[in-house]
Image (cartoon, rainbow, N blue to C red):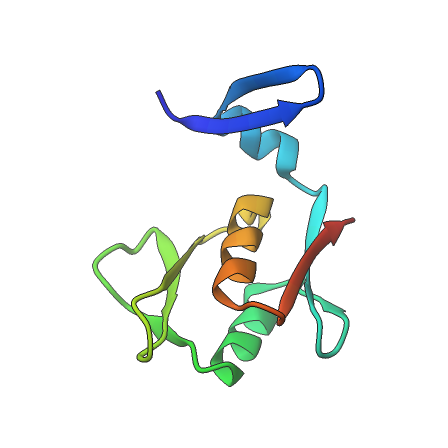
Length: 106
């Protein structure tokens, strides 16, 4: 069984991946801190990431947009459809780019 653990002050529970995706859609936005710009498309995100040293990775898996850095082993994988870009993906970008991005409520 896979999913996301949701913690609240009265307890916690495991939320299935599909349910977690529905709950997180359109509630969070990814903000590029240098300009205060909300990332609203993959083209703008790709431009920012490339300026940070990330390159588009054209691997075997054609179901995702993927980015990698030569200086690390990190890989960012994003769904092809931007409407499925969720807070999970946003936090992955934030973790791999500290002090560059921020996730906030819409």
